[in-house]
Image: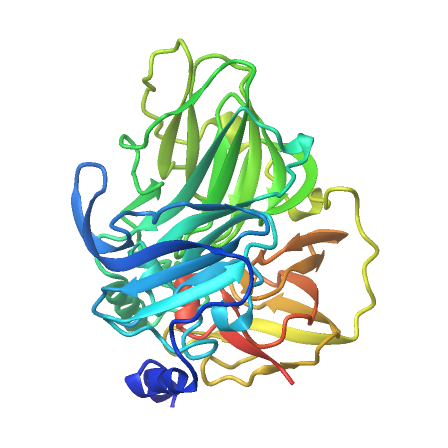
Length: 465
């Protein structure tokens, strides 16, 4: 039943249901929109001097940065030149339900050769990203950054320079081959039996803005500058750590939403999470920005941070600098919304959700059910809901809610009202509560943003009734 229903949702018959309900090309009433074409197609890209055949938007990995001002209307024309159906999801943005890009739930998959128009208002400033939500396509390189600048930027956000850094894990083979290998291994959530297969695929390299160590352009800075870094973890299956040797980072935004500034040495960033940080250029020289798997002492990728007047070279970095590895790591408990913690609203309903796994094959579950053969969660408009999450596995799970922001409470975070859309749930009996208001009607996806866990069932539909 699991595979048959999944196949049905991906079939052309399923797509025809949506096609029959209305035109696939449409425009919303309202102000003029900024129109952008995103062509998804097979491409050959240069990954550090190595030609790689993959899929991408507009011929590049990552896809082009989309940057707009708050209040603008976006019209994104997706042209599918791939050999498979595809969609685009606007990660973190509470767009209207029909624009959310989840095949089989909010729209039919866009067939090869077809065009689909996404149109919505850029209402909430912040750092977001867009990516395919069809199968395992994200892990081929179908993603790109999306930045919404405030209509009136507050003085506290002023910076001298700004860089968007998109982090990724990169396979040598295809995601489908990697997923088949995980299934053949029979690895479940114990994550240490034979090999750490439950962690996901074994990645060949790690990229920043589509390039590995040695091919990443340096970040140029001048002494005394405030440099804003927008950090996006677009990895399919890797929780990343980020730090800059010789510097502390001031965290100013989490998942695009402003927080009271916090100084840290490193950040652990789950798949789908984003952080804005400020690097104060007060230590002249050439320094490595280090990133890679959060639990590894071996860096995954190095970005040179080069002060003006300094030779643009760095010695090789084989292990994480001790000052970063043993320094202060950001915790959710450190984060308080900008302006102070709000008064948390009373909860109308608590929904307990246990993240689990099956010892028989590569299957990940919520309350013992694997999507799509899982009961939807019913929501009533206007109610205040708490998702009480308990992690019964040996893995971190970055849980992402579509269409809504939530407030993080529970273990590992005091009830500060921290606003996010993706949160890491720690392993081995870890837990967290996510509070949100059901104020965006439709059918929405809630899932683990570890792509292979999601594909293997760790997801649910939330439906307004």
